[in-house]
Image 1: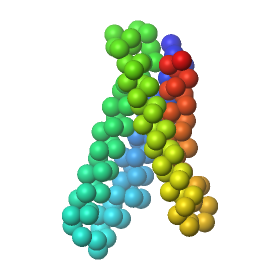
Image 2: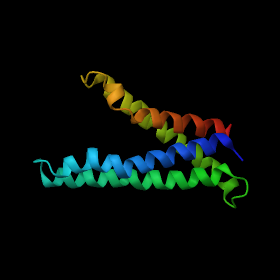
Image 3: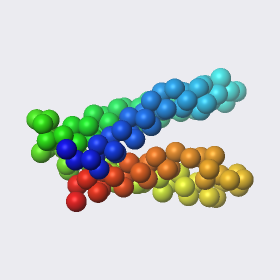
Amino acid sequence: MNYFILISAIITLAATIGHFTMGKKEYLMPVLTSDIDIIAKKIMQSLFHYMSVFMVLSTIILFAGSSQQCPLYEYVHGMIRFIALVYAGFAITQLAIAATSGIKNGALKMFQWVFWALISLFSILGTI
């Protein structure tokens, strides 16, 4: 059992559940019910679901890469490194936006970067 990747998989699962519950309620629905242009709304809806697909697939791949009993175990470590890089990019991007947003305590209010950084860190540690 690769405990670093297992921890990353569990964090990713929790983030995915949060995305579909709190993320939909707190972020997607307010955009979809706002007065902005319909094209912008549909693009935001698409972006939300692009992230949904990536998070679900990442969760599956990370769980597969955490157990040597899984038939895919030896094949997913390259994908796990890619997942780690993508989540690191998410963390850096969101933290930079939060830091320059002018929102008081922006890094705390835009907290998802913490999950992305932890997923990235544990994924990398599990593939070293």
